[in-house]
Length: 257
Image (cartoon, rainbow, N blue to C red; front, top):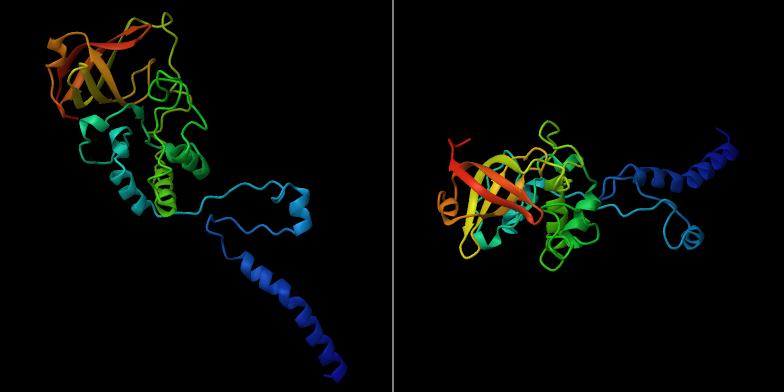
């Protein structure tokens, strides 16, 4: 090879080196799993400080560690995941909340993260989602979770994918009183009895035409109904629907599921 040709090849190789480095870097995924975005400073300023079509990508976490975060934060006191076994929650921690079975297929990771940190950013209307003040019943964990715990918890929620058990989107909508039958029946497991309020907290399956599967407290209409069961009992029950909500009119023990 002639000397001139050698110089030309060497110059070409040096010129291509930055492109090769960029190509190598682009094959290495970011923490979110997406390829890196490349932009000039002028383009950033032109687009308001971010690349065109940019959105925040939550880093990928560890679902196994996230399950432990779910337990440590006692998320199971409000949320059920079918097929999982969690400790019995403290009665004072039990609150109604949506069933998270199969929920990993329904939302992107960033939505889960926002719901955990800022639950009032998106308020889902319906029983088990909003309180009497119209705000979300979900507490914020912005001051209690580290970044690593957050991304791991989101990874665990995203791992709940069983499409055969996921309820259809929109099933949380509550039918307007007067447009449904006055009583509905359900089945579930008693999680707590709250003295002083006569509330029986039940982790129940979907109540067709009324509410999705969740953990919910219902006021017993009499002490006889309230005292008929204990925490841990598998039960069938009847709710009377009123304009102020549902009240528990009948409950009886059944064989464990």
